[in-house]
Length: 267
Figure 1 (cartoon, rainbow, N blue to C red):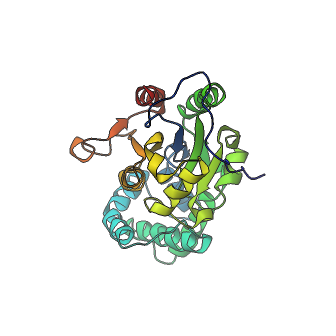
Figure 2: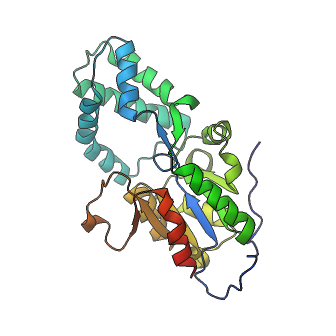
Figure 3: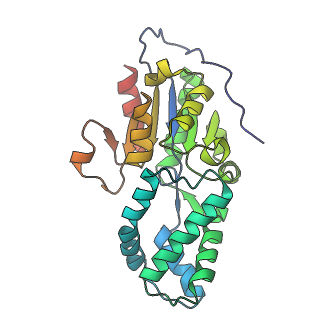
């Protein structure tokens, strides 16, 4: 089944809404916000490599990823997007896995098969599990959807198979709509994906401050949302970002903190 778009703004029940900045919609990222690769992405790659005869520690993979991160950031700033099609996704991730494997000293002859197997594993629904704080949040947002008419949607940089994954994990029922980069052909932080999200929530750009977007990326989620006037919330579970980079941004360490922020924004 496919989640239907909302046809327009909802009527908020039980409250006399008079302010123009009342929070009417909450958008949620998925990867590293609601779902994560179990037990960690580095453990997954380490396991896949081990099955194919290469021993790599998760710590070595994390170190390799940090070395490659500036290259990825440059390519991203230059406009490269990799979740807007399955072909682009496979090309990007296979390149990234190959680079990390090479930095970890994996023999060159083994790299292509391991990189391909990693891509397959990360496309397996069973690789992805829900963070412990996600289900309670979604249940609380369900209550607010019923009681207040709050609109809740997914806005995610993910391939087109995200919706089947969410259905498989019994999560799709928690959302009024899904806006997925692989479907709308636009990736955060680009404006088009956020415009599509506002439209699905029944909001215009002039009403963008009535929406809140929550995600784990300072660039894709925070900067992308802020550029359109959507209220950004950074989920920084592992304190990845120093305070000087998040000044003026609402930062939470757990999804359990989000209802309080919504209440504060709603007045």
